[in-house]
Length: 165
Image 1 (cartoon, rainbow, N blue to C red):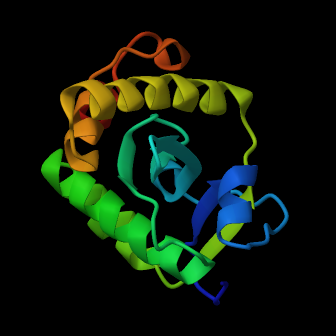
Image 2: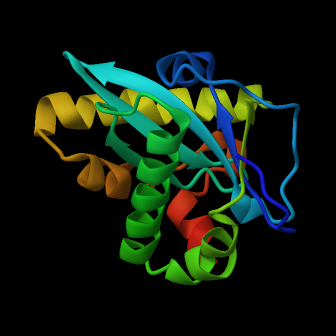
């Protein structure tokens, strides 16, 4: 989905996500702002699918249910809603309003580009699975918890600390 805007939102989809939405991925695209670059990964707990949306620069991450997401339009709608609600809850709605809302009509799907980001996401997913299985957390609660975790890729800061710095 592309239009003529200067700002565009990039979703870097893992192979699992691309397969789930029967999607395609464009050539590698670089957004004009770091807050427009998100990596999307799919994971499962028991028989329930979840999606995690991770800002590629800060590792700030938000989790949603993955059921019902069968195409790119559904993924965009769920991602935008989840990211907006997560940023609002974190007191970072400014980033949504300034960057993401301005680029919602222009979304590019591309392949993941960073093993460091994927490795960090796998760590976050491991924690998310534990929180869901052992603490019965909702995706929203999981998002709050995983954003407090120190991450090696960002100098052992937490994504939330970077987001509010």
